[in-house]
Image 1: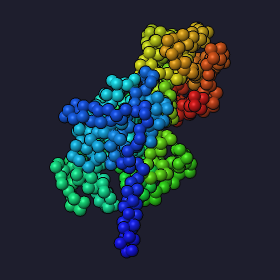
Image 2: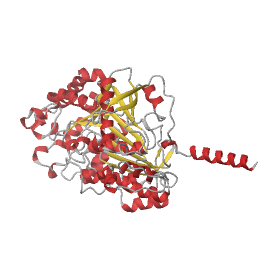
Image 3: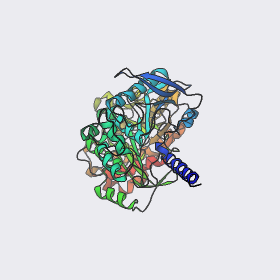
Length: 525
């Protein structure tokens, strides 16, 4: 009887431990949908055959999802995203990259980095994948691999989405030791070649751990200027999960600092990190949500990097994991207010982080005049270049936002003011007759010029512009409506405070640019 009870107890304990793996680090093998195939990819580094799960989209030029398995999993591990990916007809590759992170060839090694590169190349060649529409997603150990790919890939990846990632292997070793979990031994096995450690006797090669840590790698600034990195972490991870949120927060700060050593506002202050870690909360008056989860903390750097700390633990919110794939593609056509740093286009990028914006704004640009005798400052003359440049960069086009007219109202063009609405009409018709427009049918937004200051504060070349701009507002509204475009009036709401927003009467400071962009944002979203 005692033996039977003992056997039942052992079985209960064994089953309990077997089921204790977190959802996002399980090793369960999925019965993959029949649309998927198991394949092998020959490593370009050592010639070894690396297995993968692959799905080729039915239609050409569809996005490619590179889904990276967790710390303890491999290429056959269940992927909760696959059914939705097939439903959306995205290309898909789920590579092995040397399997679970407990061998020297795994865990962020040079073989891992190259295996992921080889997998992307395979999916592009064998599938209907677009080179300019690659998206890398990973959770936990897959988040670590996503950050590794961000730091190392030569492919023009569009978005990287790292959920509860490990960024510092050396630091995580000691964090795992303190928590008494299995991952410290895994790291030891991964960093010491030919190790034969048992569960109680092992040690870390710190130099090797640092080599495999994204946080110690240089950020490839030039390669990532057209990419977005999303980092997500559940605020209770590290307490009820295995990876402290400091792994995410520290990496975010590292990348921001690599982009701009003088940047301060975009960094997560150490005081904020301390509060998040200690209280598992952050005191703010208004909190947003993601997938019905409270967002405790969010920071962005330009339109390049975003971190979100949500109410949760060591997990990926599958309902939003693919939200970054098909986002807005916007062509912005403007003048100096759009071209300048922190101008309205930059502010729109911050407000519409998920969207990709091709900025065709040029200082001095007009609708249809050769400003200063220069053809490059005439939008009608250069429209083909703008449209084709946007299509090439964005691989599509959803919206065209036009904010022009200030330079057309300069004193030198005063006698020709009646040509300005005519030129806008010609511009809208030219856009609608363009092959790029016919392919994608983007919505067109005509934004009124902002106010101009009075003559006594402006340079002589702008004298009389204030009245000419006021005259243009109803003209642009009629032209926009005639061409089935949306008209956005920024002049009326900004005029009462323009003197305090734009000291030179033409170019508002950042506060004014933010206000301007918010008006546009409210119409375009």
